[in-house]
Image 1 (tube, rainbow, N blue to C red):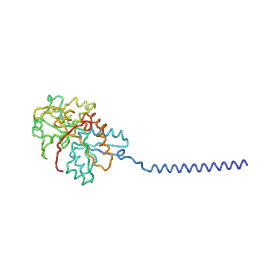
Image 2: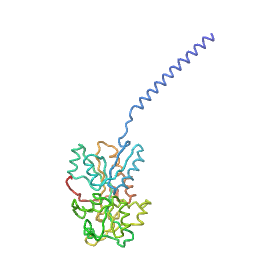
Image 3: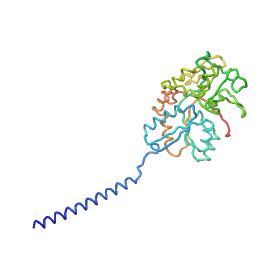
Length: 316
């Protein structure tokens, strides 16, 4: 009798173990199926994106990207520098999805982009910046006049040697647009290749004046910027009426400084992906605080009317 009970108990144990194992196998199979099923996530929360920026805006773009990636750890944003004119051409040819430059597309460029991609691009203004003129700290000059800029820029044997960061850059476009200067195709344009080289150049040539973006020198809390400002200074600009202005936040905000400009984010993206998320973040309160931290003028935090005459030109 005892043997029969033992055999029955043993058989029950085997059966229970078999059912339990089958349950585990079934559960494991369900888990496998669950792993295979993609979890629906917003497209701006994961993936990779390259944002192309004019070198003048690299610091601001990188600050935006760093904070966006903190918010969305599964996003990887790479900031790629490209001279404004070439970057805009690549954008309206449909080669790049997101761009940070100093002007929107012309109507002709918009039409060309639509024909290439069948996508209507979106432009967003996110900040005010400025083209600034720098010189050695040892140069006694504290300002430069528009008259002197016109008389020496692009001229042979100039009395003042002006040097750009890049030809066809945002700074190049800003100066030419504001002064209504036309540069011939064979015209020599002195450019160093990047803003750091301009800073080095004006330290060596004490009378030279460099032309760079304010954002390059605006982050005063950055040790690298503080070191630059030990060797170079930003010049005020004197207009044709003799009025002298500095590229300060109030002067940019009120349109007083002659070479202020808007910073645009241009997006060519289907749906609400990382590009749209990045653009929306840049215009949010947190994004605009980053603009303030970079010592630039936020576009959305401060309510105002700004008008800039956009450079209209055919596609080249």
